[in-house]
Length: 444
Image (cartoon, rainbow, N blue to C red; front, side):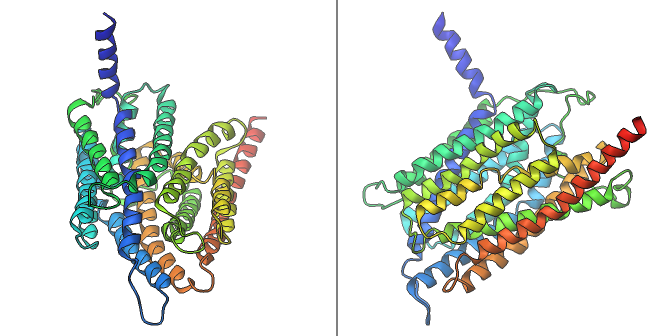
């Protein structure tokens, strides 16, 4: 009797969203390490007149990631909107299954590049396929939608936090093992084949689980308490003239400015960090790259714990400032990193760096009427897309031009921009405090 009950319990678990998150994140962390190391190996013999071999390699690596990441940023915009619309019409699995197909094809693409020695530029085509499937821009809102539908209104915030914690912990585990797997050989095919085979297999299992097992809770579209529209992440076609009724425009503009600047600073620094650790004096191996990626994923966990801790004693604006200060200090220290131990000190100082953006989104939603929340969050997301289009080439070129005399310059610039992004949040906090004081005075 116990065995059937155990099987039923296991089957029920596999029908939840968490196994999808675990499999996808494991596959992605393995893929990220593999791509980083394959790019390093493929650019090892590149030379440019008037430059050392390491400078030439660093330029080639950063140029590759600049093009690759721009494709990843731009191509998912329209597909993500289409998938969001399908989700709101009842096709709740669409924003999960379709992107997972793109994940699988891109992982398979890198595996074929490694096995058959194909040109690395084929990964640009894989990035296009990944983007046209909606990518992370469609996948993650789809995951959060199903997590929301599977919970009651009272438990929803706890479920969301649990999903993010699972994502962070899985990223740490995947990153820790990724470097070791990269070093394993598969017959005569070389480094990376075992790692990429495992990554591809994990993404295949993830897709199968999503198609065959994932359960979608049916909701009554007339019940506003249980309805959850994915178009809070993607706008309906709405006239902008009607969007600003009842909106606290000053706070919205300030929050948008802070989000743009902070995303610009964080994204720009992370854009070159992967290349920075591959050059001397760090010159990381695959195992060290995996450990470094694990430190980055660990920030999901520490930021999650930080939100739980700070929410009890400070307001949202203060939490944002704590997160921004955490990143500004850590990335400033990164400017002077010359040893692996100092790198981890810098990353440790970043422990609350992921608090600001989700909290800014929450504050933006509080500044607009509920009927305009979707368009407001979509405008914010488009603002961040613009930031990505700017910071990717900007920080790449700054890094390349300062490589010989101060490679940490990009991190120092990132730190300064982060400090500047704290100014709009401070103003919002002061306005909020004044409003609360006025309300208290009126109440007395």
